[in-house]
Length: 122
Length: 122
DNA sequence: CTTGACCTTGTCACCGGCGTCAACCTTTAC
DNA sequence: GTAAAGGTTGACGCCGGTGACAAGGTCAAG
Image (cartoon, rainbow over all chains, first blue to last red; front, top):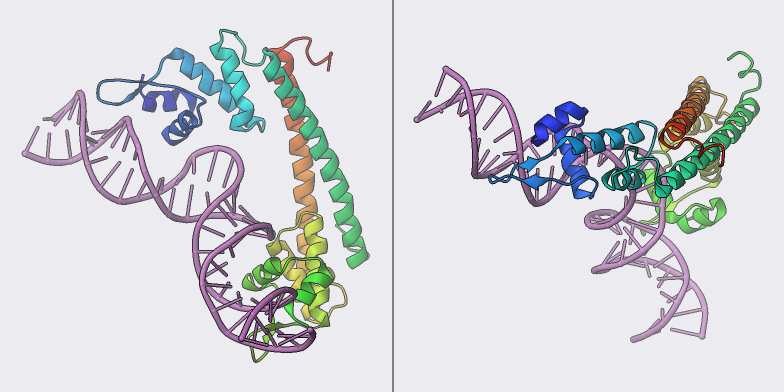
């Protein structure tokens, strides 16, 4: 299939697909006229990427998952490198949550100090 | 005082101070040679900005606080516009925390599905 | 006179993930 | 023939908050 169909089937823009290719996440054969050609496995790969991005992974984070799928694994998350990314991401999220909780109380404290009584009326 | 002293006293780079001026957050008189001239109230304003940025406010978020100080209030956070920003920021943070918690469980769920047994061994 | 510490404006670069042109080629349908 | 609907590459823009340059002007001390 060509890029437009891949885009439709995965819900990703053609621009994004070309960007993923430029970043080395997906590959394409070229037909005689220069058009990119994809197959079913590419649909799977792009879907994996989007699933990961949907939960806050970056493209670089997704790379080990793509490699894992390409190496024949049925799931992109079952290779050691992917597992490491999962663990790192969970740790990142936990840290972000801790930071936000701390920030929340700092903001609330500043607010209370700057405007006594305001918070209780919130 | 000139920009270098203001920078030293507030712990902000001269680059940042010029940027704040460009964004309209601080003002300066110019002496005969073109140098920026500041007074004590500017120290207070820049400090306020940094305090807010330290808890995750953007420069735009800080604007009402600066206006509030300029209008004579002893605290930048006591004007209605500032209070609105405080409330909005607290709501933002709460939403971010909720999003992160949701994301955390999504990631954990994906992880569990992609690699059964991995999570428990984390 | 020179050095060095200050100041000025203006510009590019960065980070990610594209959107959105521009300018052009290919293929199909009418 | 031509228009529409694909495709191609390349490049700029965005968001925020600077860092780091360039290429100068100013001023006090030695």
